[in-house]
Length: 105
Length: 105
Length: 105
Length: 105
Image (tube, rainbow over all chains, first blue to last red):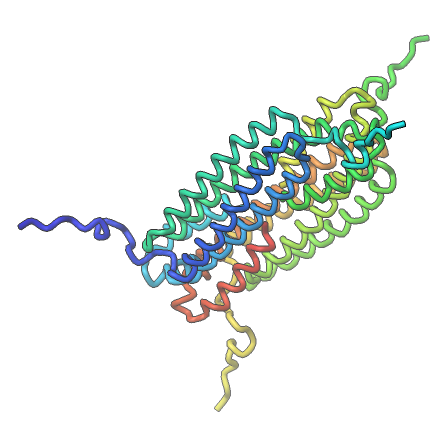
């Protein structure tokens, strides 16, 4: 019988994943942001909605997403960037992080 | 003699609302962002999800929300800020806009 | 005798300038930022300077410049944007402001 | 027998400094931004200076400073963050970097 190739073997770095605690917190927070966005959509059904009230709610959602990004970023730096020289993939990790930082601003 | 209800008592500025076209476009775009966020939540169910992939998706959602904010901001400035001296509520409008700009950065 | 053309006549809006008080405060604050930047340059003469110390000082200078931009922005909105419908140049003013906001983020 | 002075007593991490090439490039770029800021100060001597022109110039200076920060940040991540687990100071390095990132946005 043939062995089915395990896709995990193909993956460059099967160890580099978001730690379970941060992943759970990210899910919890993103569910909150998702609900908040649904609230903004309901708010927009009112034809008399005021622009500035929409802007405030959008800012609140963006603030929540920024907080989530920060937490994922911190977990990534702690678990994968500080250990890059040990693993030997520092160049790739630096490029990737600089790219992610550029987007996150 | 009957008293006519003064709409000004009910609402400070009944005229200041998001114009219908921008409101519809905001709804359409926010529905997209809402769906995208649901996709990020599904992605996070995978215990092997990679931090940087989460960061990229969150950046994409934030970029979409920024674009929506910009459109609402532009409509607000065009329809309510440029006309503030005519209406006589410039002080309030300036305070409000500076506050909204502070948040949106 | 020919009349010499007045360059102020050529200018689209001779009245749209930064109000004197904000201009003076901007000069005062920018002189501070300019001196701060000279300090960062002196700091960089030390071959043992630590990256994070440079980043902190650069952030401080950028924070100071952001504060200046905010003050100029507020003066502009108060003096020129809220009066645009009165003057009849709202379209131009909105374009210009949206452009300036895009850069300032 | 003479005691050799321990450099570790003088400085926590004598090895953690900005690499010479990045330091020189940082100096060169900051001198440019310093000159640019002097130009904005001269521009502000004109009582007819237009707010939006000041805002544009300030944005250009801030863009230049952001580019410098990015280069210093990249050098720091490459030279000091990816090697933190090897040195054993990952906790401190992560805290410091998160703080620097918070300021730089």
